[in-house]
Length: 242
Length: 206
Image (tube, rainbow over all chains, first blue to last red; front, top):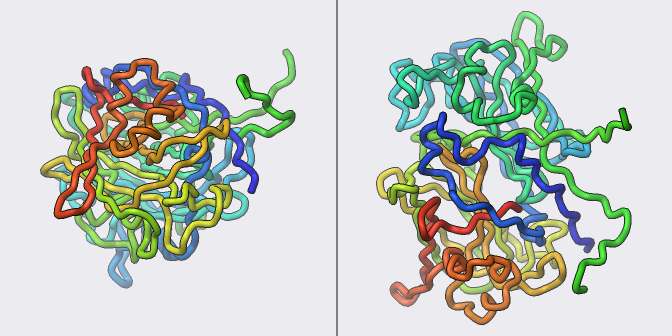
């Protein structure tokens, strides 16, 4: 067995700070002390392995995975596809990608969501898939609606899909949100704006991908996800004290 | 201009939000959609080692339990091997070492059943005390928080653990140690995570 390689240290300048007072809930939920930096051991360099026995082939089709037979959720039919890559631009194959979202009216199928837009009887709002050998993944769903939320009295979330990704090591674990090109709510959303780097926000914005559409059927957006990269061993690292 | 390095930038994190359950634990959100939800069985039926239960809560800066958090656990088996191609020797059939749990919507408590992991090695080959790697997300948490859970009955191993010893403030090491007790003869560990305050849990940049 070869030991897994270390990850590049995280570039915290592109991530939202824990304490982001414009997003009020973060105030009491943000640690105050600095995180302690840890040389990764095997427990951080490895992570759970998923296979096709863990999921069903249809789990990535939100148009059908909760709909009654012959029925379909209401809304703009979209394909959301992309690749999971690492910072070295290498594909991350065989990794679990899970998504969840509101329906086309901006309502979540969740016992705690009380927004007045109706639940769609044919839409669950979650999907999952495993990337192929090239790191590619695809979901079919409806475009989620914007919805109001309690932060300031008049805050609206831009249309977004939540995305959870594993990678090959637990230190790569990531949850993020995918936004949609051209949405005027993006630049005024307090959650989006927790991210200090405008380029990092652009990177969370899926692009209309006309080439991936199904003509007369479903429009498509492309959303690539980049996880932390691993070092390559060019020369042996002789650690101090060893 | 010097040459470009052509590295990509990591995708920025965003909060998991209050409805994380829809994606990662839909039954908790109130509906049944998947043949099998993932992460509820960490060790499997045939795992070696001591069967344990871990209970805890996640407490915010106002002292209130967080009722919409999700935690993931990643641990070695009782021999100190991870269920991963580069995780050491092969693990027993059914042992996954990975779990996912939510805090209760009413009480804010979480609990898991697993086995106590064995010792592992750090990046320099030094033994680490038995521990579980934890990752915590919730509404209001912008980037998932990483921490470790150690065991109070491993005082000797904990005393020489390289990660615990790296924490300069000795009193803060205690925030990572789950407290063992026996309930009906079975071991139960208590592990509360505090996001702020004097007893703020140690979080790691891993």
